Amino acid sequence: MNTIAFETTEKSASIAIFENERMTCFAQLPAEIRSAQSLAPGLKQALAHTGLKPTQIGLVAVAQGPGSFTGLRVGVVSAKTFAWAVNADIIGVDSMEVCAHQAPQDVEKISIAFDCQRGQVIYRNFDRAEDGTFAPAGDEKTVAWRDWLAQTEPDRWLSGPYVSRIDPAALENRLLVAPELRAPTAQGVGELAIRQYAAGRKDVLWDLLPRYSRPAAAEEKRLAASNNEK
Image (cartoon, rainbow, N blue to C red; front, side, top):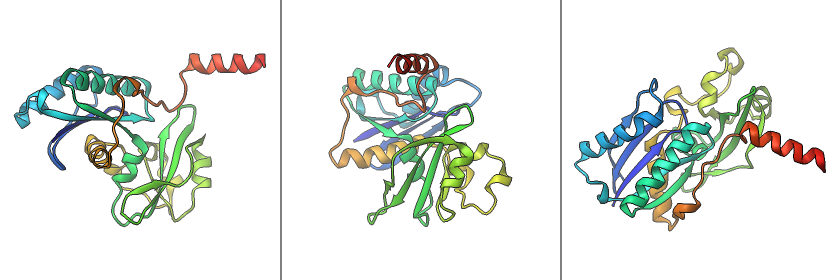
């Protein structure tokens, strides 16, 4: 089976194609061009590189979030449109789980943080299970980034795109995943999706939605107004 994976949660989007579990193509799209403009040409080039026709794709994988509003919308809509057009199955993959999956094999405990704007992060902890995969160790939380560091045990590795934005002085003596492994990639998205698909999971095309780092500003105002009325 051929799988195509999209990752658009960060500024630099990527695409990967797999034949069964073997990655046959990986394309990092230009960071200076928005994914709305670069994703379709990148998809065309990736398919041409592998010699595959769109109809030969059996599974579409996409990073579902958390992440930025525009990037996630572009990625999820593109993945759903492609899957519908070629009658492929689709899976949305948790972006934090992708970051944990990309950590080196010697990492047993990890905390993943994404930008939540306004000086805050959304984070979740993961522990490595007996089968070598990562499982969530608690719920997602949204806090100030300094509180995230204070709440995270010193022996738990730190990763996720937000780590690269923190002043290195604030990260002194912390266990840090290498910079090139912190942000989710299409390779990680595809590997996780293929594993989950083999275990029997797939999403309903029309029910798959992006999962943003926080509600849109308009939605936050509506919720605040609703709460004030209660």
